[in-house]
Length: 387
Image (tube, rainbow, N blue to C red):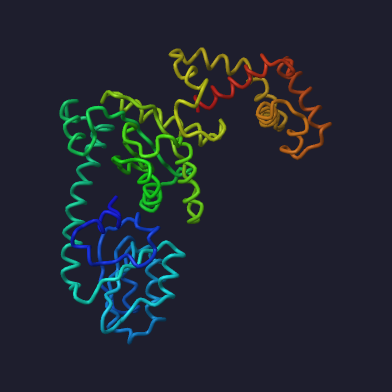
């Protein structure tokens, strides 16, 4: 993803000032659009950088503010205001609006020709898009359609900034509802956070997944756990009223063939998160006993264990239209504490005690024994893996 932050680092940008909205410079930018009237605003496309001289606004600050608001509404990357005879200075209301909404507003002096600005911006975007397309292809080839030797891949990754000591890991982000939306807004939000953590990463969108290859040896904030980064991503998503996003990280590996393994591990974390089977996690190394279950080669063994522990309870619920399986999950998650179970299930404590006794009778177990509870938890974990 190409950001405004990359664009404003260009020497040609040295006379153009970021006047307000500096917190939004990590916004994606995919094009540039010149407009002089709000009547043309319907032609704004998401992630375009809007340029205006105000020639058709008669110096009216209200019209200029309306344009900025509409540009934000259309998810523009920002707006460049060419100050001069038509807009002598950027109104304070626009600067306040830009800071409040983290929407970048640039001031370009009249001596800078709009045509020149468009020329170098378009040229830069085209060059960057070619490079990013190549980087995405390398990542896609690495994970899905391996065509190059390990030596060739290492050479390509080296050209993209990954050193010989790189510690490779895959991060997968996807929507919780399993639909395939426009992933660009999510990618933009994620990379606003990633840019503060990783010096180097590759990204690609595959179906409903945004996939990142990162290098742990080049983390800018090594003292901050990745879980904090995931929390920041979630907070940014919620702040923008977007759908919930799940984040999964695989283990880190030094060898190229293991990168695909990291991808599979990241997907497993996502699968478990969708099942809400574990406390909020985002790293494969935190999934605990699930690793042991997944290493069992003979699936019949774990299927039989699951059925031995839970099949009678499932059958009873089906025949009598009860909810004892669901209740048992709550019982185990709350470690059998009656008061907590009562509050969570919205039932009287006496009903809790009755259901516990009923389950003990159906399964012929003693739910006061830790060994029994451990086995039942494992049975539910096996269910998460098998489904």
